[in-house]
Image (tube, rainbow, N blue to C red; front, side, top):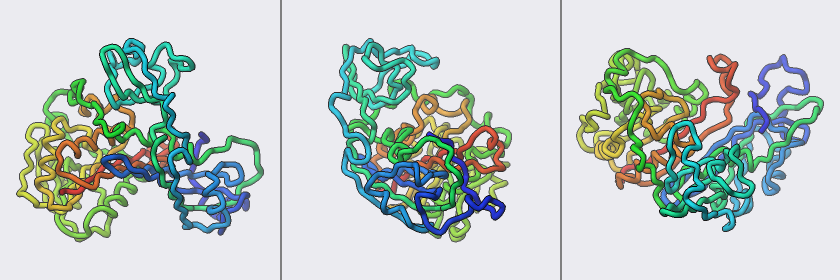
Length: 422
């Protein structure tokens, strides 16, 4: 995949890079793609922002190509694809039955790995398969385990899904002289890297629980780890702006909201000024610095998951970049449901950065797109939420003033899972 960068913005740009009014084969463009699909228990949206598309060279699905040419900024296109139209069809021959000992349990440096139903592993972990080499890191899924055999699904995770692709044109500019380069296939851009992995396989619950998932590298009580303030964010400004925009879409405009496991920022957009925000966290200095809070409480949920609020106290609950630290998630999610009003949403957001000593053991061992699946199971285990949804966002350029801008081209990915109290 080509490296993507932010679109040109200034009048100092050469003429061939200045903004254009409409798309054409001689144009470059930034577009946002929303890939929408459904599993047996949830709806899913996987967003990819392509910031430097070459409309002469890059390949759009035929159903969309005519609909994105000669169009202005802000134009949107929606198309539904039957299984096999946008991505390769699911094939029975990609469902492989192998001997149990062909799974290399010492494949990683993280110690002994057991095959678990529903989990994804690099294809190279399988030994003795034609055309599969140890260096192949593309994911495959274990879907059945017996004492003597395993069944592995090598199909693309979205191969059997109906898909809806939404496209929005966000910027257009002329490109200069052509000097070769690779073409991008839009279907590959929006589906590569994990979309589909957050759902169960054929409604079978994923086995996240067999290997002591809630152990942590640092077993000390959390108040000791957080005794001093840590004024850090685990997402860059572009990612946090997207989290704020998500909260702006999903939260009520007024009412009482609980910010669970919060810190010095709550990331609510300004238009939610009617919200009365209660913050529950672990460090008093961090909470004091959060001027958005109207009420502040200190509590270690891993020691005591019982929330100090009456039933149906809140219109919504949010948890930003913290769900990975919960060692008693089932109890906490049940408590969140208790303090939510019927219909109130519980929204969790996270990224691929965290405090490693305090994250639960399984979190680091999961593929990024498996983590929304894990959090979804927390919701489902309680039986107290409905309307489950997941969302992912990738491809935004990292802000130029970010401290990692010289090393990382892309903004931190954003993942979210939410549901409504029944």
